[in-house]
Image 1 (cartoon, one colour):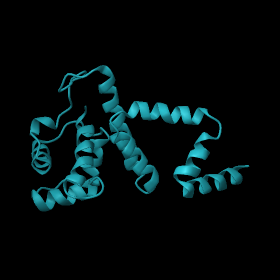
Image 2 (spheres, rainbow, N blue to C red; image 1 turned 45 degrees about the horizontal axis):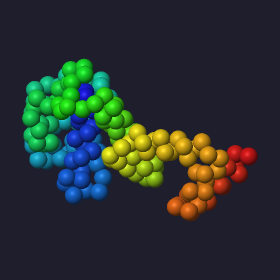
Image 3 (spheres, one colour; image 1 turned 135 degrees about the horizontal axis):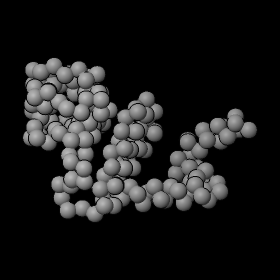
Image 4 (cartoon, rainbow, N blue to C red; image 1 turned 30 degrees about the horizontal axis):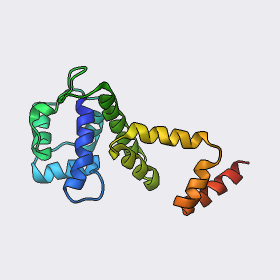
Length: 168
């Protein structure tokens, strides 16, 4: 895992740990670090770290992030290729990467609450890969997705029908 992925993960879990109903944004982390740790780390700098544009942190940044997230400073470095901190199968390692990718994608859809929440729920599910296989099977069956929406989320089914008619 890269330091950027670790930082993104820490932000994701820090919000609920603080009693929020969502992950902390980069801006919220930046402000909280200033208030709680007394260090200055800009939202832009956090973004660069998470996107891999800043692969190595200064010691002061690493220490401030470690104090804020209450992790050992040594955690905030890239893991060597193939490194796992526990005995896992290759499938579990791939699932972890998939979950991180989904969490990252959820952040990009923050302004679309339904997509944001769906991606986070998928990432938090204990068997993400099987959930995706289920979605694939649903989409392979003609009109099954629409029928399921009508039963489970009728308010979304109506929107889907309107979009289909507009495209036709």
